[in-house]
Image 1 (cartoon, rainbow, N blue to C red):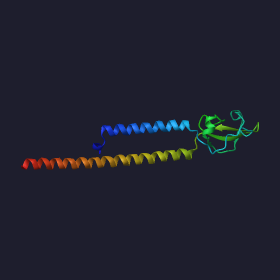
Image 2 (cartoon, rainbow, N blue to C red):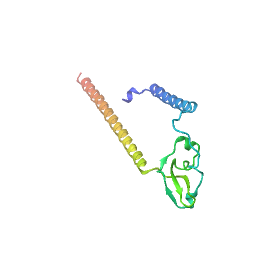
Image 3 (spheres, helix red, strand yellow):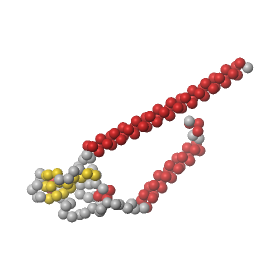
Length: 153
């Protein structure tokens, strides 16, 4: 298997990967993405207030992921973790967003995705090692047969 990978092929492959990565980065910045989402609405619903630090609160909205636009525009509550929830300060009666941790179910999904990927990588490694070992065993048997054939003559 490694006999098929020459230095020239390896260099061409690495150059191609490098070219693809640079192309993706270049075109990703050059072509602005067209967002289908509605822009961030800065209304009374989202005042910049940190009343939740000093007052008791009621959580109105669930913890949800901020959009890329909200993260880029540094919307209230999105910057620290990338997730935010809508809260109501009880004394001042102000609705505001605060940062929240990534929900547990998303962490579980990421964990299991990682585990599945590692199992797949492990199986590929096992398969490639076994196939390479078979090739080497066949080469060794052929070499021994050749040596035995030469010694008989």
